[in-house]
Length: 247
Image 1 (tube, rainbow, N blue to C red):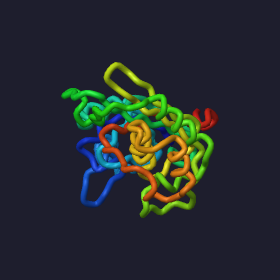
Image 2 (cartoon, rainbow, N blue to C red):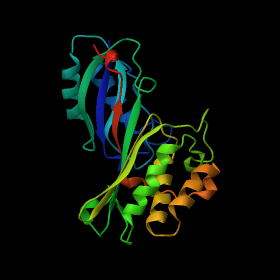
Image 3 (tube, helix red, strand yellow):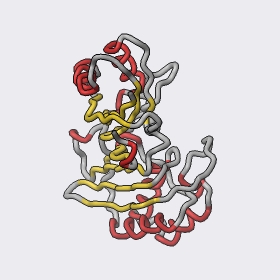
Image 4 (cartoon, rainbow, N blue to C red):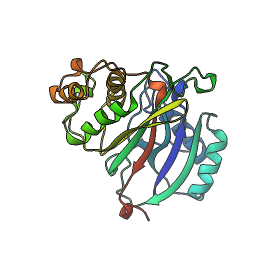
């Protein structure tokens, strides 16, 4: 049987989601626990990578197993064994051919900024205390919906077949002492959200205009965009699938 698990993790102590030969990824921690519970080697596959220090409230992975233990029992047992900064949230059975990465129809991220020094936001938000024009940042963010090629916001050394993404929403929401960027798309390039946020902050500081931000998108050149903001403010918050993959 194949199952989709939803998992949350604080990425501070991990070198991203994906397992690596010389560093600890969240995937490795989960596989080790599942292998212990099921007494056999278990491999899982996530909906996509998250980078070192990036968090997730709703990452999805698929896994295959058969046996006497129900999926809900495995979820319960695994949560007892997983590190304190990793938590399985939910499990659903899916069709045999369902794929956590390739069947995802869209994903959503949030980037969290705290606008004043906050000891409780350490490792989970970017402290940025300079004054920002949020209305102007939202005008610039709207421009993202008019384009598909986001090479300007992609890491330079990346192995992708296309830089095209369909962005479904992109906006800032302001709180009393916080600022959150929401973005949803069918796919994301490596480093894309952090580069977009870094460039939008330049708009908010009146270093570049909304028109100049749009020209950066058109340039298709990473050197034309702003810096990437730190990873600790970034959260993967949603991965959506067609309903017909579920059993």
